[in-house]
Image (cartoon, rainbow, N blue to C red; front, side):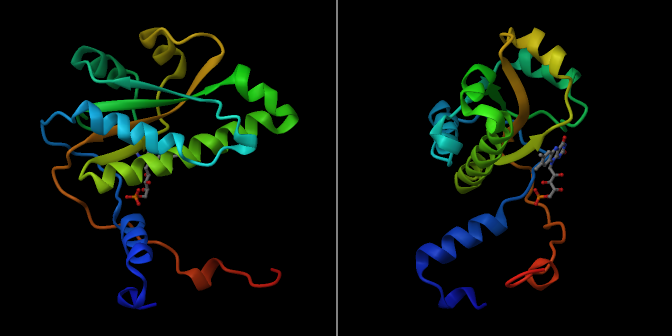
Length: 179
Ligand SMILES: Cc1cc2nc3c(=O)[nH]c(=O)nc-3n(C[C@H](O)[C@H](O)[C@H](O)COP(=O)(O)O)c2cc1C
């Protein structure tokens, strides 16, 4: 499809989705707090199953804490300016019945994508990090029992925007009206 033919809003949304990259190298520059809060607000606007919103966010800006988190996070590259920890509140998730926990994880994913796109639109690089020691992180950040840190989102102004890793074509994965 020729993007130029699309209405402005559709083109901008698609280019934003396609242009975002996982950024693993950062320059040494702080991110304004109001931008970080806007990124979290974008996460809150993501859809949530039954609108339970069993999500909590921990913003880490302090350099000593960032260093401590890095030590327990093998998946984290370089020195980001900030990290947002995306957490599930299991007390709230349990109100969603049998599927509550699965839905809570999906809620984290919808928030994550909104946050990465918002960051990208602000010129800020981000990378989701699943590889970290949950128990160690809970101790470092004094996270209560019923809160589970699920994912880290590292944030910083990028050294460069890398080339996109390959993606499948629509026709490779699309099954119309049945498998
Ligand atoms: C749930 C999830 C966990 C991820 N964990 C890590 C990680 O621990 N370390 C890392 O460097 N990248 C991690 N990534 C980033 C992926 O490697 C990246 O999204 C993928 O290579 C595609 O690149 P792109 O995001 O630039 O399109 C993770 C991504 C997702 C969605």
